[in-house]
Image (cartoon, rainbow over all chains, first blue to last red; front, side, top):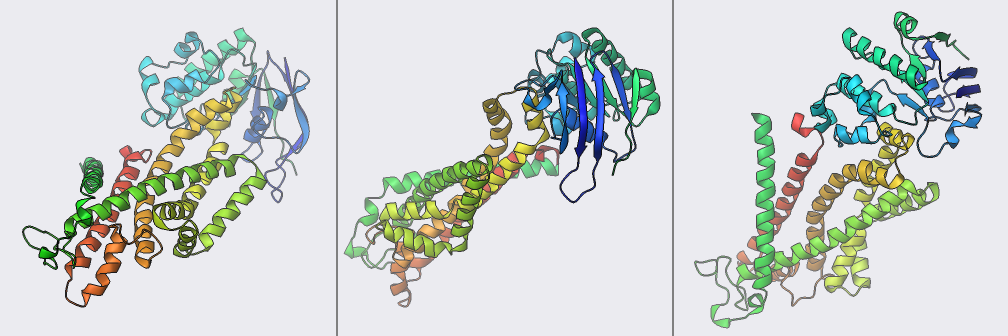
Length: 203
Length: 274
């Protein structure tokens, strides 16, 4: 499958400056692409547009030639956010958070080091790193074809980081899921990606 | 230690409020007959051992009359606050999810009702509905939904944009499931606390329009009636006719308020970690 952004432009509101300007980008599902840019250059915004959380002002996002926003139900492009506490409902147990994903296999849950006991807790009762593993697992559902990882390992210690990335690389390789990784650390992207793309300042 | 005490105090207050209010309501209901009983052999007695709150100019037991009046007030409060908060829930959710036109119409209605002084609107509605029990309930219900509706509208608008709701949409979770699992658990505490904090308003407004003569009819032993009748006898030194019913009205209202506040503290998300 191919995920493609065609000449997209975007700005938040009318008065603010343009974040993305006529940006085009293409990746296939066997690739692992790293996105590098300084703060405020639109890395997160790009992820949000690619996964359909935001509509671009101009241009379009296509998944195999079909607009991403036109996919009803489960979206094959899943995003993992930088702050896991914003994407889990504070009133649901972690087990229910996991159940929202698309038939998450036990292999994934074990591979990410999620312990059985954590599933019975509420989000306020586990750490950010533990919560992030749930979010990664939830995004790795059966129908996921592209995974957008927006600074997903910033809150983890180095050992956990390497554990999670090793698992993710293995997983996306054997299931042919395209991975788009955003990070401030060039060394990390160097290690995990097959291709690196630089975002230029627009406007 | 302090945190535990705070929570326990909240539970205690809630318990006291619930027990007292239920007791008054049920007891008042049972003795409603004797509240109307006149006995001229015992008229105008100041508070004493047999009649705690004294008796009035027709020899009616003021204690029984006070409790019956309170019971009536609580029932009116429950009914009108219930109707009012369901109305608020319905309109608040409609405003938030039905698009711009519906939203502006409902927001305009909220502003309109809020813009007119409560008591004026209440008198008009109650009078138009033929006063009495029905008039009071309809009047209170139609004037008190606004702030809760506004709160619920804001909450739903915020929830709609919450990242975990948007993520659930991307994960293909159905609209009903999102409403049931993600929205309702957040709305319920707001709704419940809003409902309970509406009682004291409802009771006070019931008493005040009854006092002004636009509410319940004079033969019913409502607190408003008792207070307005006792005005004539205050100058004769029969202070007990107004003091005890008034005190008990204030007491009931503040118990409701305290119960609502305790419940809010108990239901506030994350307050266990504070």
